[in-house]
Length: 167
Image (cartoon, rainbow, N blue to C red; front, side):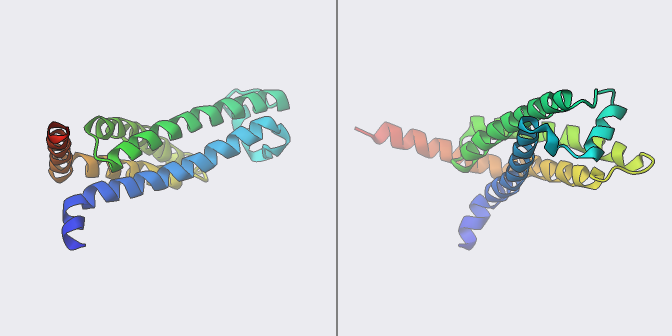
């Protein structure tokens, strides 16, 4: 078990952390999509926040906005899931895709969280956004360390060797 963790630990940790984020985003995206289907579910707090951003607060507009937001989030969940499955199978192209997806999450979420934290009053979910950004950055670091790169390179060599020996 110890040898396996030394060999695959960074990959396993990246898949675990990335998968945890993906599940959380899947839940949030599904909730937004369902809110779009039934705009009555959208809370008053969300409506007032939307009005402050210049979005009309009518039920129809909130439903459309919620549906589009849910679809966008669920699309990113799908991309992240496919990338993480490829990472778990130690495929180099999927590792690079995961680096891009989770880098984008970190680049977007950390500044959003910080801006929410310095607002007056601070945003209620700003610390969650910062945490999501930091976890996304951790996934990127885990996928970028040399140990992970060597593991992926060795997996590719093993696949080529197996393919060359196949009848």
